[in-house]
Length: 202
Image 1 (cartoon, one colour):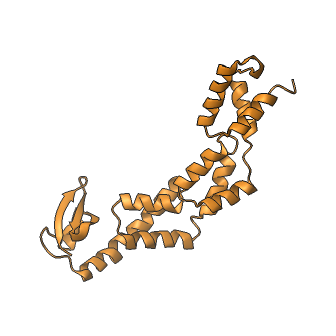
Image 2 (image 1 turned 45 degrees about the vertical axis):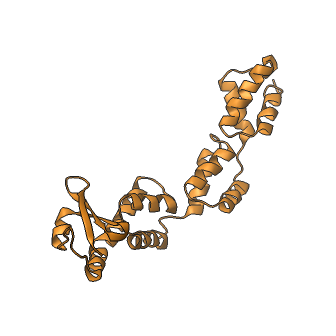
Image 3 (image 1 turned 30 degrees about the vertical axis):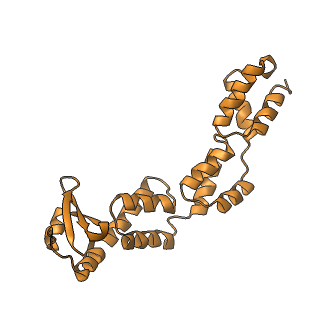
């Protein structure tokens, strides 16, 4: 591997850009310690030494720090490590470490997420957000079957909060309410049911 360029990231760290668009982020003292210079070759032995002595441990500490701040899915941790300039070997090591020690579990994360948001967000919105966080569709579906989202109750609460009286809505007003709730991810069926029954017990 040839060191193509060394670019400062901040006052203490620099990006070591290698050929084949491969990048390492190291402290300046580490760059000096391992004798890394622009235009020179970085041997496989030196790379493995950097990986073993520096990057594996640093990636592990980074994910533990991220998890201490808040729950994360596997995909979120991988993305954070990639953004931090960690090579794939360090990412794989860190993720395996937190999995083996049960610091992350995407299914449990999904269950907690649904439990916390089931009275605040639509099922569609929850599905979308969990997929963005890296959970697969089948896992999300199973979680939602086990912990259903009561969309009608949320819609009714929204209508009460906005002081909407369905019986007083004309066609244009009704369409506006339906459109507003649809943007929040609620289904047309759930919205129309709620509009029809919101004050039926008053």
